[in-house]
Image (tube, rainbow, N blue to C red; front, side, top):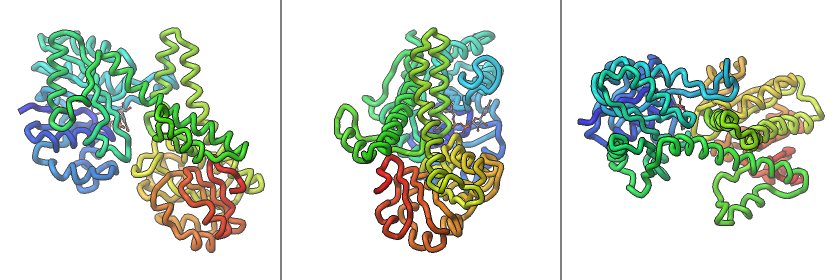
Length: 450
Ligand code: NAD
């Protein structure tokens, strides 16, 4: 029986391994983590992350061929294939601070693998890492390899939070990069055989190591760039009377552009886009390509501009001050169908409003009070949208949860201060209907008069 161990039981390691386990009953999959609370949660009825469909997948194979453990060294030593899915945040100190990826967790995982291994291993980069990381990992693993053969593969993960299970069941592509040596090709083949249990062969792409590593950064940079492009257009739409939804529809009909990922918003968030672009910027700078670095930096600048533009719109619409006014925030997660608040635009929007002395009240169906406390050092969290909006001067919609379309806005209006404002940062509500009720509505990228 092939044994897989995954180091890191996070948003990627957990769902990815659960899908491998459910699709490959003859493979034993153990997900390990240094965080005991996280592993305890994976072994409980309340999983540590919210993803549609995840509970069912985990329940189908946990205890059969899927296990979660804190016994990291034991399971790494026993595995044939080791996925490393640890966090790779942006460095906060020292060389490259604010841009480069912090590979501390990766390096300590690699050193531990080298220490405990007694048999040949395939080590798979699942985390998003800078191009050429495999070279460094190889050095760490083979420095004192005691005759053990290590093959490093790059197998970046393209899942999107909120649709992780769907994406893993039906990936657009699986990318595997390896060394172009006989051993390297053998390792690529072994990993291909795992995915071949459910992914059609034509969707499994194999490349050299550096192409695979760089493709993940490139994919996230392109996706974020698309959001910044449409958000830049949204500002111009507001200035000219064009409607960003109509513009997106019109340009998306061009088959070269395509309709996806063209929704204007208050900005992108999540743990990956910004950090991966910063990482790309750093790599460009290190490789003597400042013009290319500047090009990608602009994607983040527009994103920051979009968030501050939104806050400014709220404050200026409310007679230039929100001091002492209650502003209800509907949606705090960085997108719908996840409880993840890492780098969510809601943090910056709330900080902007709090900076102007607003009383902020937050509701999100999947975000907990603890998260709000950690992200904003405040605890004004409500368990219901009606409670959050009661007595408010304004409502800001910051996450596109479907349930925000279905709210009883007449009831909300009746319980708010007047004039009652709605600032829709995701274009989820029917602005015309809300105007009929009596709201003053700002929808991102739409003409202000409707
Ligand atoms: P995460 O923070 O949710 O999970 C990482 C886990 O690794 C944590 O639970 C941590 O305790 C554990 N860990 C760290 N060092 C360890 C060690 N030495 N031994 C055992 N466990 C250790 O992170 P995530 O969101 O799952 O992301 C992981 C990687 O995948 C990152 O590189 C990220 O960029 C990439 N990625 C993330 C997404 C996403 O949507 N979140 C998508 C694609 C790729």
